[in-house]
Image 1 (cartoon, one colour):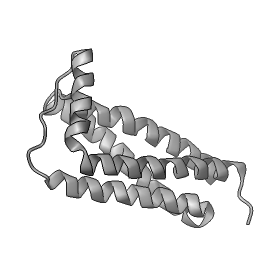
Image 2 (cartoon, one colour):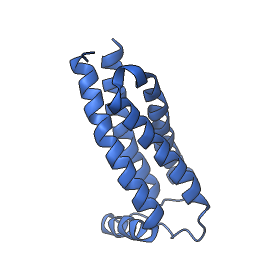
Image 3 (tube, one colour):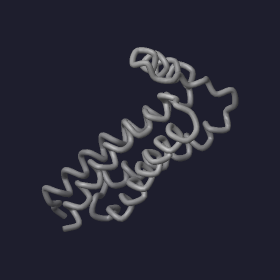
Length: 138
């Protein structure tokens, strides 16, 4: 079955995101201190608040679960955009919630640059996927 130009655009972007999400998950799980150190170096360069390194690993279970879920969704849409298009709103929900959470934590909890990184990275992904999804749904 042929796919439209709009479906192909969404398929390509989600195929790329599947790889990005998987690599990000591996970094988050296996190199958390390195990631936080890089974020803190960036924070220092721009004069933002440094984030303390997490001392517990509870967040890794939640992070790993979410990252693998959005990796799976992205992969499945890449594999068959027509059949799995209904999975895209779950991915968009994940990105908008993490963006909003990052902003809320930054403004109402602590001014850690890492909280802003959530919004800086995830909100543009939400916008891109939303636009492509809406074009397919027309």
